[in-house]
Image (cartoon, rainbow, N blue to C red):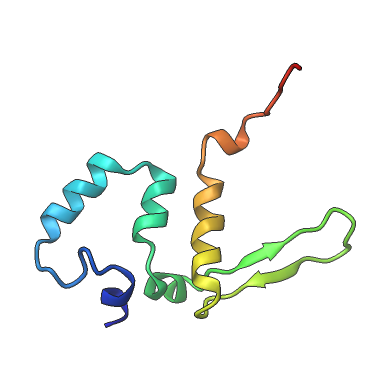
Length: 93
């Protein structure tokens, strides 16, 4: 039921091969995570987000695997796989 709430376009439709082919053809790593990482997997893998402030001596748990944290966890994990996020952004004006 939870997967159907989060993924109404494909959860419970019975055509898993079509969904899998679409995922392989149309999603890179980060977009795949945004599209398909479910709350059930976030809980199963016990994912969470740590905040690391440069001026703070300790880490802070910013998001946990609960209703409010699912989207933040998915976004943070997806962002870590974005190729453009790791490149320096240099502009000459």
